[in-house]
Length: 388
Image 1 (tube, rainbow, N blue to C red):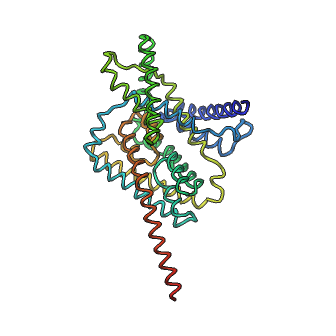
Image 2: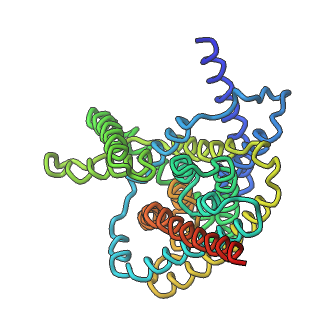
Image 3: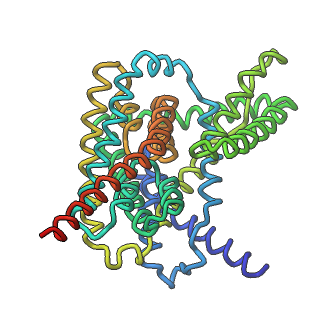
């Protein structure tokens, strides 16, 4: 019991210190400061583990913190969900599908570079560079017998670059979109708080409790049907289900009290959870893998920016939403950024989820194809040596 309490305290202290980094970055006017600052501080704390600050192995965050973050942000996304943007996805599904397939093919190319210029096996290389999310790919790697350490390291590095670079670039490229969301999102939270405080009633409590119940039910169903990122998508769909069926029984609009500090806390947890995945052991003996993986990630980000610009120009979709939808950062991370930047979260979540599904479907097939091709090549080389 004491050990669990000590671990919980150590993890809470780690999150608090990471949150101070988020606060610092937010004071500089960055709308994505809570997550970026927490991410950077968490990386530094995890890598150096300063004993003077009480950071040690007990400070390692478990997946429950990451799940809690997804649950908190999933409810916020579900409350503000705008399904009208799905019509745009439906009208332009062909170009979206082409870009998604291109991103997967390009990731296969970076995987082949990793295989070619390092001592990593083919299976590990493709899984390490596939844009399926830092939470999904290590699990698949474990199932198929790939090197989980290398897959986790390269995936963590990729997510770090995507989450730390793309939001800042968008913030600098589109300053009006980087500044407004701070006021917009906070005003929404403050307006909602004032409204609920003024009209706090039994119905408000009931709707909030119902929202939590439906959100958790969505998580259970999402896990049951193996939905990608069930703690985010399941929560989102659960809240959406409540808002859809409530008019059938009540005339009153669903009002879920979800103060803005919970959204901020969710952002801190996302940044701290990603940063906590870094370990010194990840970089021991894999210098060449890290270099090649980093170069591949930067090239992939650049290619996705170009594709996002083309999609935005053709379809009229908001450029920020297009970048975040196709960015190789994972559904949880990009959905969080889209919410912070007041972008079309629905479109981002839909496209990121589609890519994860495509990655899960195509990566094993492609790996099987390449392994068969390499096996035939090796057999041919052996037969040539025997005949000679």
